[in-house]
Every structure is written in structure tokens, then in C-alpha cells.
Image (cartoon, rainbow, N blue to C red; front, top):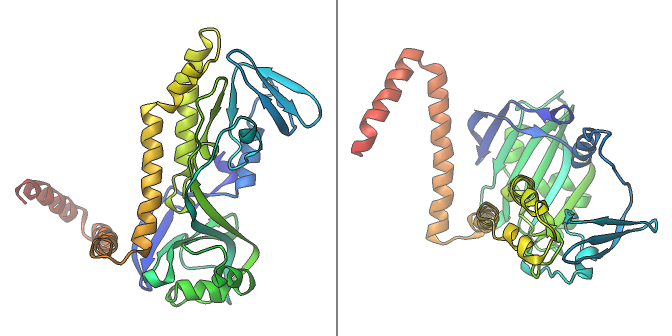
Length: 336
């Protein structure tokens, strides 16, 4: 899988037009379709793969029937719906998708390149917003092959004129929401297909039904800016494959009481709650101006700044002095 991604090795963190930390990174940048096709390529030939669109579904306590667009039908004991935000099959099952935060955030993806230079100075960069009035969480710039990719996360209505400006004059739109970014990274151009995705936060209801389970975005949407989407779907799949499905297949039937065990799984529930909390926390820390949230912003900034100072100090001090300093910190910490 990693051969389809680009490892950046180090990421710079910045705010207010200055770099506050340069930390080692295990981030791997990839395009979604490339990664999916790479994973599909790893499926062994012994596994039967059917390339067709599922257009109908019927469930029962025993067997489930999937109707395909080519007229064929598949019979199985269990259906795992991993179809993201698509609603067609869910509607047939009367699974609802109540929205808990409409247009919670907008994610913007684009290619970015330096002007009159071969490359940017940084291997990867995350630049945090400078002011709540810009309604911007952060932008992250990271390499995919020889291209620098940008993901920007903002909190605006889909009808906001800024969204239209991002399509027509993307450099000016990015400057307007992160005014000090250009001074830090130098002049740049934005090119390629600019992908703008408004995101509603939703949670599915009426999900405890015989013969079918939902994973990842099919069950509940994360906010892309919170970085929880992969964690959510991996936890869902790990708990299904490692815990529930083996137990379910060991006995006849696939009634709703079995399916309920998955949705009551403590690890799944904890991960879902964590992702929801991160989504609302990131929005609040980006937009809110109460004393509490102002303190949250400054504590995060000062924490990252302190980590950056400590990292630079550990890299420049002699090894023996750094070890002594570390020991002293450990010694006096309990007394504080």
C-alpha cells in the first residue's frame, strides 16, 4: 500500500507567519483513487471479485439478496454496507440519516507550486489560522510524488462568495483566509482540478436490522478536518472482522440481535464519540471568541511553540547535557 503514497519524513507547523516546530513525520500522502486501486490490486486471485453496481437489497433473519445493475443477484448471510454517503440502498432499508450539523465544514483540495523556484523549502507544512474572522481551521501542504498537494478546511456556507472565488481566483482566496501564509512560503500558484466538498455531519438511525451492517461514512460522517475518518472505518472493520463476524457465522441465522452487538461495541462507540467530539471542538476552536476558546487557541499555540523550542534545544545541546536536563525535569515534576 505504501508504494502508492509519498512519505514526507518531516512536517513544519506554522502560525502567524512563522514556523513554530519542525517535527518528524510518518505522514504518507496519496490520492484516494490511487490508494483504493492499489489495495484492490493486493486482493489475491482466489477471492471472487464482481464488478457491478448494487441497485437493490432484500434482507431477512437468514439470507440477504443483493440485486446488481446487470440483472444478477447475489445471496449472502451478511451485507456490509461501505458505500459512504450514498443513500439508495439505505433508503430501501428505511435507514435514516438525520443531519446533526448541516454544512459543518468545507474541505478544499488543490495542487500548489512555488513561483520562480524549483520547490518549496519545507517537505510538508501545516499552517494554522491567524484569526477567527477568517473562518479557517488550517491548510496542510504535503507531497504526492512530485506534486505538492493542499488540503484546506474552512467553516462557511456553501453559498458564501468565498467558495466561488476559490474556484475562479484560488490564490487570492487562499491569501484572504490565511493572509500571512504567502510571506512564509513565498509566491505560489494553484492549479489542477480544485475539489470543494461541503460536509454535513450525520448519524444513521434504524440501523439494527437483520443481515446488514454499516461501516465508516455509511454509518456516520466525520469532519475531514478532524482527521478521524480513517480511524473510524478501520475500527469498524477491525471489530467486525476480528470480533463479531466470526461469532455470528459460528451459529445459524443473522437476526437483528446479532447486528445489535456491533453497534453496542464499546470500542466502536468510543471511536464514534471521539470523532464527533473532535469535529465540534475543531469548529469551536476555529470560530468561537469566548474566553474559554481564546484560551484554548493560545494554549495550543504555546504548546506547539514550546515543543518546537524543546526539539530544537535537544538537537543543538550536547547529548550529555540534554540527558541531564531530561533527568532533572523528571526529578522535579512530581513536586510542581
